[in-house]
Amino acid sequence: LHEAGGETNESGVTSVRGTIYRVASLGADARAEVIDGSVEVRNGLGRVALEAGTGTVFSTGSAPTAPTPLLAPPVLAELPSSLRLAQKPPSFPAVPGAAAYRQQYAGDANFDLPLSDLRTEDTLLHIPALTAGDYFLRVRAIDSLGLEGRDTVRALRLQQLLPAPDACAPADG
Image 1 (cartoon, rainbow, N blue to C red):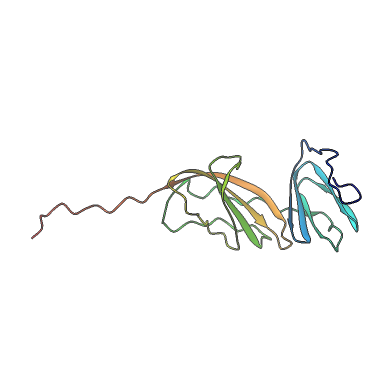
Image 2 (cartoon, helix red, strand yellow):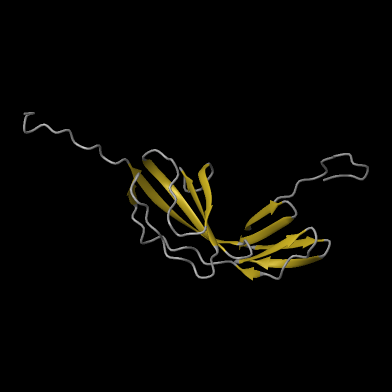
């Protein structure tokens, strides 16, 4: 928190419990999405109460928009649980209302250390340059306002392609 006069002085800490939400900012534009619980978003031009499954966009020059329902999670159940690296990657079904998708890969189900974060406009899996191993894939749909919907997480095993066998018979000549 900042005091008058431009000096920085930490005067408190704020914490949240029992609420899962995302906030993102890019320049003057921002968005907030609530997954579980509730959050109030306000600026000098207005305020909005967000409940679970809703989001808002706002900027320095505009009030937060009315709560907008977040998009449903993508369905990844039909994807194979194991993929060979360098093979053509599969697609997942499009989410109605989606303008884009966020695909993230991590080595753990909590995504504490994400390995890849990609925004794409198609439903093709975009597998980053990873070595063979076990990973977790998290995908969410993004609407035309830029609000990111609910997540789907799926375990995924990446396997190396087997090398081509050497010819051993018949003998040369």
